[in-house]
Image 1 (cartoon, rainbow over the protein chains, first blue to last red):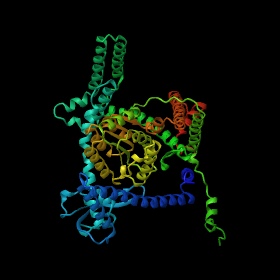
Image 2: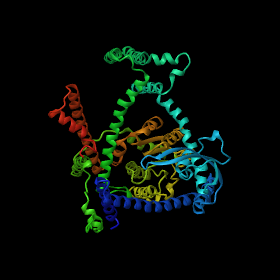
Image 3: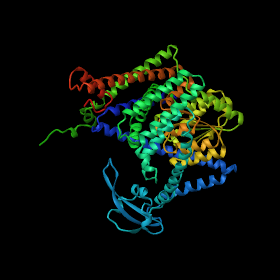
Image 4: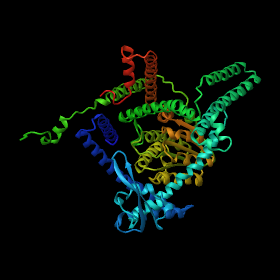
Length: 326
Length: 291
């Protein structure tokens, strides 16, 4: 029974969900099933929360008990888990005061077509220069209450206080690290180690130049923007000719011939390229055609992979929920 | 006075009275039936013992190398299955690979660490790893706390994983599953520790980040193929073959559609058989086309 029941439940639920996809969205059956799925997800999610909490306490509790290196961090983690959980339980009226000011109407959720008022609030008094402080947090939390109000001092529930002033800024800080990581990643990506890497380098330079306001660079900015075709095609031709020369000296005459012919072909393409094609247009061509084609190719593969995985799970060939294969 | 309305019927009769099929999705149903049948056919062929060729995937070939290296230098292996939930196909694919990787790790007797973002995924992965150790004949080597929960907040999770990478310096990092903005934070933290990194995701916007920051990257569908590739189970390989044939069918449809579309626009056709066929081809993948 232990071996048969879970795959049967999984198969039946999977088929029900598949049938649900094919129901017209305005039918009562669709809505009832949707409600059932939402409620089931909430129930499972609540149980999951307890499991997660138990794992967290067990893991960090062990580290504290064993005095493992860095056990102090575990004390902080567990303390704040308890504090934040408690703030969710205590009254909504308990909390620090913040100064708030409505900014502008904003359609926060396009699907629901709800107008929210963006507000900014600060712990240390409203200042014009803190215009965008916690803008997103405000829009998603307590903006609807603020409609039409002027600068006010009001209480923020302690849980929201932690969310807006501790969790959100910390998340934003971690997210900001991406800027630095992107620079190191770009450095690694932009090394012409092979033929493919060189192509990547050239296309990324075109996109970079097409994306940034390069014409504002003093002296050379306008010249660069005005000679987009010369720069791109000449770089390509010179690079290919350099590669062809290397092949010639290595006595690979066939490869050398193919590369030289490619350089000539690029020259022909340059001749027939309309004069108004600049970096902006080249960027659009790269993003809309080769980039989009590759993306869609990957997407088709991913969807077929998902379909195959679904069939394997529905038919019980794969049973990850039971610890592996069937 | 109205004596009879639909709402006065019992609930189950109200359901029966409704239209149960959205004709806009007819092409999706036909697609599922055709491609599903292909996959099922190849699974059955594999069951009957037919040989199925699968091309080499370098990222998966290197798993053995990564595990061997971790065992040699005595450092743990970190396995991260992304930020998706239990119903995310990429997370499911990552869990399938975890089962196989854990089985090999059990043979090598190396430490495995699986920090999770989702408690349900954590529970499933605990069971997966436990079963893998049992399959490998080393149930005594399984440690209860090797699969654990960190946080359900995306960036808190990314920070915690980066911290684990820097403090414990795992020899190999597996970053497989669904990733978003945290992908580069985690991958760069791993790269800075000098670990072998094997990544794989179907999230298109994150693939470039993994390619530059990791040693091997499984691109898109390779993630779904990995479970079958690593385990070499005929049943799973069969589904892989079915997927490939389905892709071939789609490519053929696209080539025919491109040729017909080019003819229609070159000769400015407005009606006739070729125009009708081209129009039909254009509508094949459109969910609202069969209204």
